Length: 96
Image (cartoon, rainbow, N blue to C red; front, side, top):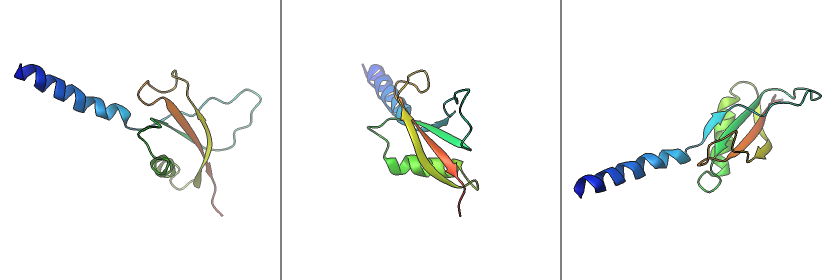
C-alpha cells in the first residue's frame, strides 16, 4: 500500500509540470500574407498561467528585437498539448 501511495504522489507531482507554459512555433502565414516581423508563440493553460507571465516569456524571446505585443490566441490541439491548450502569439515590434 505504501508503494502505491508513493507512486501516486510521484505521478501527481510530475503531472504538475504539464501545466508549465512553453515557447512553440508561431502559426503559419497564409500564402497571401506578408510577414509582419518576428512572431513568438507560447503554449499555456489559461487557468494556471497569468497574462503577466506570458508577456514576460514573450518579451524574453523578443530579446533585442523590440517589444512583445499580443497578436492572437488560438486553441487548436494540434498546436499545443491538452494540458496547455492555448497558444498566444506575440509580435516583436521594434522599439522607438
